[in-house]
Image 1 (cartoon, one colour):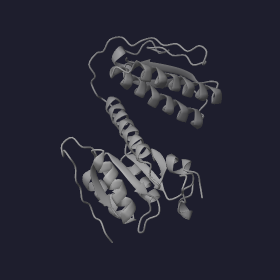
Image 2 (cartoon, rainbow over the protein chains, first blue to last red):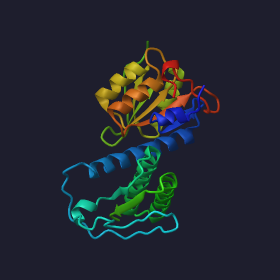
Image 3 (cartoon, rainbow over the protein chains, first blue to last red):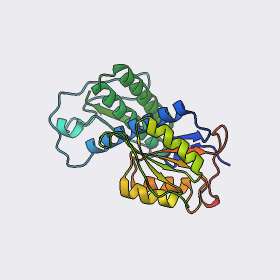
Length: 156
Length: 110
């Protein structure tokens, strides 16, 4: 026997008991579909060679307490706006090559995408929650890899 | 073996499609009733292999699958689906009362 996290690691959204609670099942279904929609939107935004409309300048974010450096243009000032602005993108200019840290960054990227989605859909509280989770994940990544220099670009 | 894929829905264009993969007919029918009542369009399959077939053909928005099934288990189905569609939404139902444990096939333990 193993814990359901094994199924979760394989990509399941949720593991429920077969003694179905209607509310729990429907709530899990709704959240799973919402997450899928977010992932699809995110994938579409990150498709290579996709021409995006030139958006307004992204907001500057900072998180000194978490140790992660967040900025619209990041450390590579030579990059153009079109290259940097996507709904949520994380790049790490320095890294000790810790795979686990990269996984945390990937988690953070998902939360940032969720934050952007919620913000666009007039849910600022949800966006704030997702953003807090993203910052926490970035903090976790930095706690694993101290060399990590994180740059976040967000279009809100 | 019962099943294959059948479907119903209150509005075919708008309803989101859910694939229910469950070996036990009774459980399957309960899930079907719940999800249909909630407005989902439901597709049914009696085991993982048939579920995968229906998934490939119909591209449902969500999969609700049991674990222990003949031919192909829910975990194997999950792995296959994940390979083919990384964004697929899958909910796994375990027979365990509190949903805290899932028995995986020996060769695929993680």
